[in-house]
Image (cartoon, rainbow over all chains, first blue to last red; front, side):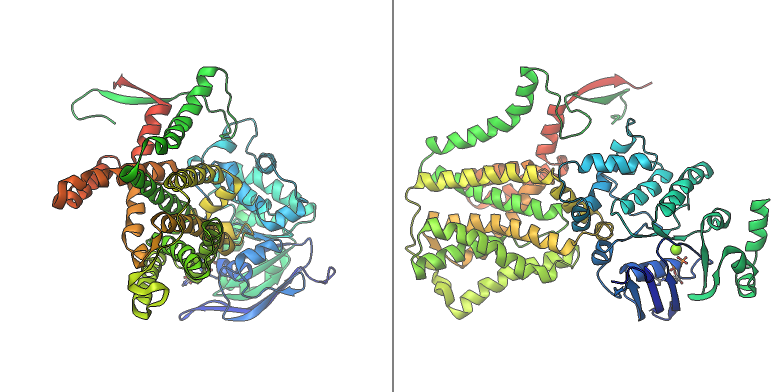
Length: 258
Length: 338
Ligand SMILES: Nc1ncnc2c1ncn2[C@@H]1O[C@H](COP(=O)(O)OP(=O)(O)O)[C@@H](O)[C@H]1O
Ligand SMILES: [Mg+2]
């Protein structure tokens, strides 16, 4: 395992759904500790790219390497067990269970058992600790409420907590902020920044460009399943390909920044 | 909750014994200890005393009820991780033929055949069904429905394991009281063990697999391995019932793969209520004696039996157990609607 090499390497990854080229020949690499943003219009293949990397969808061609080992087409639980966690654009939670029980599920995985050194019996506390960090105050009733009864912004953060419970080395966030209020975004963004500063590698798919560009090192732009640009936020926004494919965004960014 | 024309609605209040986490009880007095203990101890004690007072026919009914209870518990356990089985007779039949075969051909005594059939039955069930556990809902159910028919017709056609005549003159379990107590104990142990397991983290993961298997996978958990474990556990429980039955009747025939052993457990769960195991157990304890009591009615028996079942499911869709639990755990008052 090459500790110095890239943590993630995607080589010419493609996926066709029938006639639709959802992802086409996408390649990129990710350094340890990097914060990568992925943008692109709706239907440009961002979620499919995440599904391909995390094993939820089998690629038509191409390969994925995580920490130097090939993970192409492996089962999702195996990939997650290696330390690659994700959140879902459409949150997938256990709605009848109390919020904190949702976080206990990944704590039961072999990966976390190994990392925690076989400590049993305090999973509840560990789950509450993680949730407290996400703004579910431990002394309130919020962590104990059924997930289904929580407002949307909490569900997104619960999904994030569930991903973090896996103690990932790489975290992929698929439109975490969609459906969150401005104040929820404002309180969640610093958490993600802090995680990155603590060494976690993060890939973030996001439509809110202003917030995204403030925190990422590098941006990757998808359109019709293809990578059309890659670079620092300012480089990407200068690129002609992006301007033509992504008409109107530049204006948005300036308007939001102003 | 409002009944037509009335200006009242029911208001429900929990009896406040449960503390914040459902694993911690704040028990303050003898009354509360009794309140928690009695619903568990009374039925268990009653069942344990029952074999002392029953003989012959009704003792057989009790054993029979425990068998179906075990099959219903096994069904409910599988359902807790999203596997819906229509083939409980597969588990039952495998256990029955394993015990019967080992006893008949190798002359192993019941002390050995019972545990071997229990574990072996579970292993065979999980080996047979693991390839299809990736199938969802009705497809898994269809395969479980077909497998026992396959075994039954296979035994019929090949004449193996006694063929249509079955294997008879098998070793009895010392005394009828011994089989009765094994049945009752097995049933109670399984009931309380399942209730404990489902409230543990292990059970939490099983239920999460039922709710959303992809979310569980993204938590780094091998859902297929967990499901085969569940199949092993459920298979073992069913196989134990089958093995016990074989030695109790000192006979095993192809009827152990009959549809009754698949459908009645599901009916018991539907009657008692799903997901709590107590519902499954209660359902079996109602259905089996009821079906025996109706025997006196002759031809109309099955029709009446089915009507009772349908009526109870229509009037109490949550299940008899959950209805009783609710009545026990909550105060109900009528409050005026303004
Ligand atoms: N499971 C699927 N079956 C068929 N087509 C799909 C499937 N998933 C995604 N697609 C198609 O692939 C394209 C990319 O979708 P997606 O990855 O969800 O885009 P994004 O996340 O960027 O909005 C879309 O045209 C979508 O309709
Ligand atoms: Mg998407």
